[in-house]
Amino acid sequence: MTQAAIIKLTSQQASNWQSASNLSFNGDEISIYVDGDNASHLRSIQKAGRKIEGLGVKNAKLSGDNWCESSQWAFAQGFSKVGKYEAIEFTGSDDVIKRLAAKQEVYAWARDLINQTPSQLVPQGLAQTALAYIKALAPEHVTAEVISGTDLKQQGWTGTYNVGKGSINAPSMLILDYNPSGDPLAPVFTTLVGKGITFDSGGYSIKASAGMFSMKCDMGGAATVTAALALAIKSGLHKRVKLILCCAENMVSSYAYKLGDILTYKNGTKVEIANTDAEGRLVLADGLIAASEFNSSMIIDAATLTGAAMNATGGEYNALFALDNEMISKAQQVAASENDPAWHLPLEAFHQGKCPSAFADTANSTTQKGGGAGGASNAAGFLARFVDNGGKGWLHMDLSACYNEHGNGMWAAGATGSGIATITGILLEK
Image (cartoon, rainbow, N blue to C red; front, top):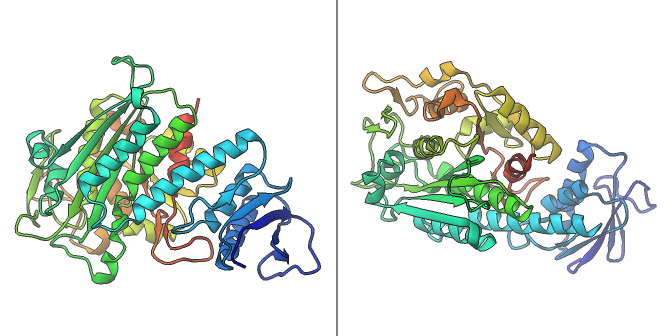
């Protein structure tokens, strides 16, 4: 089967139903059998979408009365793959089709961006691409600046500058303001901060080849927060939101930052470098300091930050961290309603002391593999040093479900878009 197929959802088993795949076939029409209505069936529908795409179906047209918005999106997640991110025709009311089409377009943009090679997408290019995408959605409401190279050092953005200074491609920081009110004194509702490491060699704490292979995806946090803002704007966002992307390549050269270096941040925190492969938290620290200066009600950062989070969640969930229980509760509720799996991992004030240094306020990690026990929480604890008000209103998302090096029964290989819906939902909450 190679052309468009009509896809139906049914609770009636056909005589030619294939129990191993929950599918039945009638010419170019394929029916997916589900029994009942709960989250496990959304998972079954996503798996069916993956199987149908694997049959060589180029385009899918969803048809019939049994499709709801969430089941259609579950199918889309399974069916879509590299080169086929917008190959689904949705069904239902005009509003449902409009929402799903907007979601499909934004996810396609983000997934394509994350999948770009490190030679295609360099730090300044990432910042400019994100700016152009948001600017095109609301040109009259968007202002921005891109700070690059030694200007970062001069302005005190020490983490982004030092992580990126070893590369021929200059580090960059995008600071974007979406302000639909037009009032320069309007309060900032949320500041979004994204890790934009366009390639991560590990620096002098160099990764093994197998660990480095997928590190084009290490800018997944930047793509995720940009896409979330874009989808919120398309969905009628009327509140002021700031977007900060901290973009760099983590490379080895005579100019690269080194183990034992001490970085001094704008808020006075001194950080000893114990591991140059713990670079994401160093660039995010700049973004969190800038976000705190805006006095926004919420700060949400997103990053492909730790292997420890992936080990904890199995790559099926994004990991959530906060010192503010209200933020965790809000994020979990939205993630559940959006079928965008996320799980709360531990973070307390004491985690800020889990990376000790004899020469600075803290190290950026430990010399133990993976940052030692509780590595994901320790990384979040490091970040907590750079937000004001005891972390009130701050949420950290470790995007352990953002990318799959290999395809599986749920996803094709490459970026998934996981995390976008949760952040968008938080932005759109009344």
